[in-house]
Image (cartoon, rainbow, N blue to C red):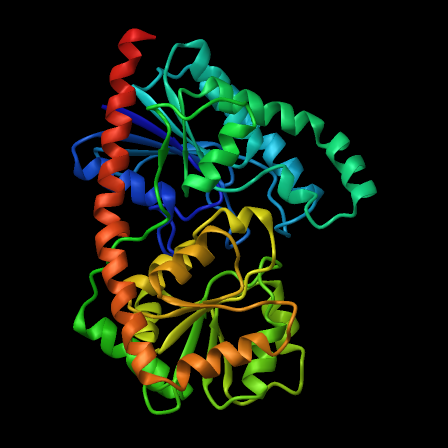
Length: 415
């Protein structure tokens, strides 16, 4: 089976940034392991480093089973703004040109967002009677207007009307919708609208176990020791991720000031700069910047809990991010402000504690409750590991998706 994957804004096999694989790489690797051929379409512009990979539209034969096609675009400096929208529009235009002389695959897996590239690819495949499944991970374009007042929201929705039309076109012309949770899948189907079919699917944002050498682990452990982040009676609470406006770290800083536990906030982004600008940071708050997979693994092994201080947004209420799966995999109780399906997961399975953002002491109370009770930590750790292995194991998760794509490929015969 020949599979196209379209996914921008994620690490690729050719990158040397040390960032963890996400949907595109995880699916490509799983498909190749099963003996399938993969063409991975992505942007020449690296979303994380904010640099161009080659500076042009190009094709890289990474291996016998994997071809990577990079589409050129202007790039952007900020995650949010008109510059990024212009970049996506240009990338979609260049993608359309590059598709002219291509032979369609057996099936395509199309990342959404961006809207523009997904729209171009879905239309092209639809005209050639090639089945595609759209992978919905964000509620675009709605997330742009969630924080606006009612009057501004109406104006913004009117301006975003073309994107809404493209979104509906993408969902209608895809044979099926894949999403990260049942709630997100239901949201996607409500936009068309239609009922769930046998071609719709849920694939969680899990990550594979990484294979590390003893020397890699030893070096990472030494690095954490040098920063004073040790596994001891003090107790460590971790966050690993992009420090952007999705997260509210004010309560985290407040909790650190009013407790003795270590808070390790690993990652980079605009929020990190804002926190570091504060000259009165407590000594038990560490911001090491980006860390690699080995450093993340060793940090988790010396931590007692994970934290996800997510703002109140509808799209996150429908989602279970990789932070939750990582915490479960490592047996770390999760402390989070998120509502919706992730909060239900935590409460029903007793794998963490949800706190409220409206009360500045809520996080501190939750942390003290968890960290002050070793028995509770042990029970939640056991529950988390058991839940991950029984329901969210990465290998089973992606094997199910591959079987689903194989079924869709077979449907091409009846289109």
